[in-house]
Image (cartoon, rainbow, N blue to C red; front, side, top):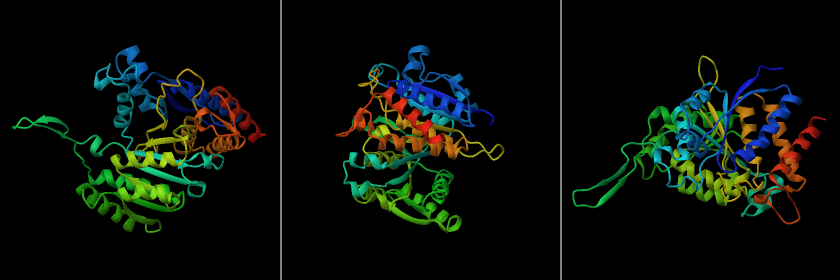
Length: 372
């Protein structure tokens, strides 16, 4: 039995606890049926934490996040707290602190179309069938964190809002390198995306990405693409891409475009990774589904747990060095979808609509079949 891995679970708000319950069942199954087990700590975050402690995340929880091998996050926020708590303590602030304090600069957003769901996309089957791309978004810098920012009153009495887009050379270098490292394990192609035609940071990004491609990764196919063209190409011909690496703002937008190619946000995982520690070889990491807290279906046993489960599969792959177990989980998802099981968000004519709990039951039975 391999030594236990430290996993911090933060279910959060809305459907977060419901989908996380199903993932906990898979984690327990792995501990019984496979050679991997976990030391699990669970805590509050987001609105649930604010209700209990008056903050969106406690310092003690942050300490646990620093000590963990990985953090698995559910969802944060909901109308209960909208405009009703101080901005610095809004539920989403807990997630932002995790990303910032752990320096999780690399956000991995895969867009994968399972064969059984190719018809669920709003695009034609031939456009999305077999789609498997990775959006790599810089997560801790850029316009969302740049200074100065705010609203000011000018001498003539008019008001002006300011956000600052700012990147340093090392910030660009490290995210671009992650993109090339990912591509080497996939289909060996990187598309670097920016707005070099109108933005100084875009021209700077293009210069640095081009240098790294030429000097450090000559074996990887590489191209530059303007961000607006990239958005258009994602809808026109998404299978031309392998890894798209881009800044915080464009990554936010392009990853949502790519997400909808797959047919449902309820199917999409993500990973946010820090730098590898040169001494220990470990890196901080947070894994979360792309979907939000979905307050309209909270507590109704309707939520799709697959995105959270696939996020855990990413943790198995990138944090726990367990690619075979990650493959097993992903294959179970694929098989269950192929059998016709659907939660409400991915329901199709002629398929079997099931609850959150029943989807969890079905996934566990499929895992049992796969290991004999």
